[in-house]
Image (cartoon, rainbow, N blue to C red; front, side, top):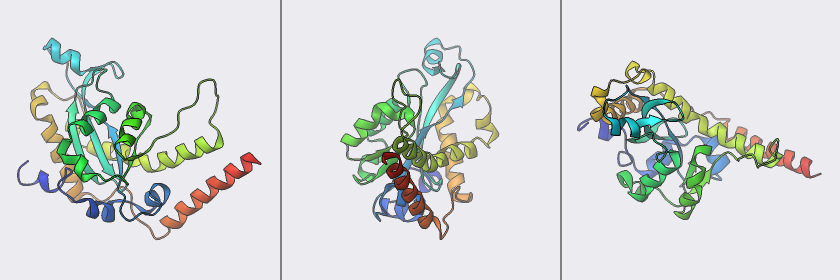
Length: 246
């Protein structure tokens, strides 16, 4: 934690310019950053680490997830669009007060790891629908937010524009799911974790993520045709929208 992890994970282990240059794939840059050379695109998602049932009632109440019906803690994973793990914050309790939106608001409010100084106003946050309650908060802080569109009440399907926008977000956001799956390849995190490890579970997770950054290849590679593929996707979306209006 002293000599290895700080060099390979955390907002302060890499500067903004190097992250943008090395960990933003061309498809994501074309789809969401208008080919800006300065905008960082980060993908955020909360993952789960399952725990044994605790004899401590207060801890059991705070760590019990009504969504999963099991005790767990929730780290917040922040990655680049190539799958490089920028930071892992937490873990946080899993009760109803600690959903993805509430965790993100806390991270920004306390300036975790100095992230507010690291992030710039042109940066893009790619998230899923679980972050819907924090979208306005992020935009008030100057960040661009890309999230799949919610189906409006009474509607049976999305309009063409909304469906296409959601597909673009999903194409970029899926990399964080692959990152979570890579971390769970370690048997320690793939199973229910003994309560004896709770005090150091955050450190253990950061060690694994630092090892992934150092020794594992990117989950999403860069190919010469990526930019043209992204431009074709955008052009196809425009054609579909124009056809729908016609």
